[in-house]
Amino acid sequence: MARPTPSPHGSRPARSAAALVRRELLRAVGDAVLFPARLVSSALGGPRAKRELQQCLQAPAQVAPVPQVVWRKDRPLRVLISCAEVSGETHAVNLVHALRRAADAAGAPEPVFAGLGGERLQAAGVVLWHDTVTHARMGLFATVRALRSYLRLLEQTVTRSAAFAPDVAVMVDSPALHVPLMSMLRTLGVRTAHLVVPQHWAWAPWRARRWAGCTDLGLAILPFEPAWFARRGAQVVLVGHPQLDAIAAPAATAPSSTLDTLVVLCGSRQTLLERHAQWMVQIAAEVARDLGLRVVVAHEREAVATQLRHLLSAELADGSVEVCAGDLHAVLSRARAALTVSGTITIDLLARGVPTVVVYRLAGHTEEFLARMMVHVPYVAAPNLLVNANLMPEYAFAGAPPREAIRRDLRRAASDPAWRAEYARQVAQARARLGGDGAIARAASHVAELAHRDLQP
Image (cartoon, rainbow, N blue to C red; front, side, top):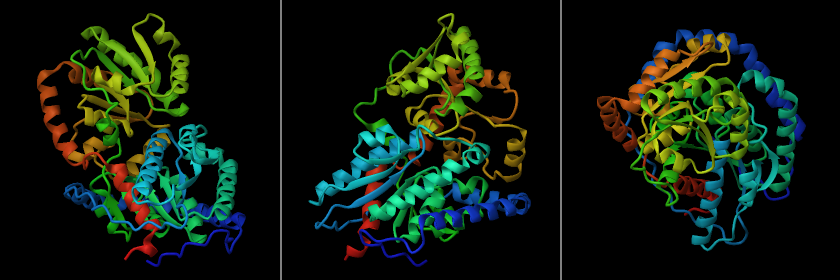
């Protein structure tokens, strides 16, 4: 695949930002028109797709060698970085720091950063063009409702990128925003990297070639992803899971000798909180009452904790449930078991060995129907995919939650010695496939090599 030549500073795109946005909008319309046919094709091709994924799930975990980079010394590296939700911002902030350390070690000027994110990315010294984290939306229908502001965001970002002229653009997760953005940036001649490659292997394999066409380098965090994307013509390397860096950090609290809490983790976005918080806490409270445990609803951000206190006012009234903001390490160190929504946090819980039940309530029966037609993965939770087994009991559903089944599994996770022993054995197997800590440092080396590719011997 031919790679574009990075544009010099101050260059202008051959097509206006508005024209590039219109092109992406037309592509999106075309995708919508073709969606019914792809839905049928996906359903018919489901068995073959599932067999292929099973082969990739069994592939050995091989972290890519760290490249040796010759840094330019005449000017600072210019990096466009973008994220659109809380966990992605954590990775983006850590990547900014890692690139600074790498530049300093190479005797190169400190890199210059600009892009999209939230207040933490801005505090890390990134010139923020738009706060995409605070205003994050999730799901197809939420995106459609926000279409006008979404298109305006793309146009403004492309215009600013043309003036900023980055040496490399690093997108973190959130493919709905980043795939069209990378496509437009490549038209400007910008090299693109995507940290946390999209989960096209789960439900939309036809999207992978489009993604490969606008991504110079994919940085995978799960061991089976490079093999799957390689079959679609993409250059993807395994860097390992960034969440292990947080677990290995000195600030992380070691497990307490007193495991006296059931931890409930409801996600970050308003839609997730509204869809999950009340019934999850009610189930956890029932189990905790029987076992003599406390219930702690935890989140790192005070703003999210405030939302949770508002949603859970009735559940908090008798004092048996607590909402805790801040040090998630300390909360999880006392966790006897956890009830969580599916997401990045499951890797954190895996790395800590916390027995966990995973839930995800779909937006409605339409989304449930589409999931049945299109989803090719045997499991939803990433830890279960790592071992290709139901390590963390999981429930994805629409409508009323299966309370009794979730309650049974959460009680077993918290109190059944045999279940907990088997869980610990499988956790060790899953952790061995994650690549160890240092994922962000490895990702930074690959990003730096991509940005300096013309200078390499």
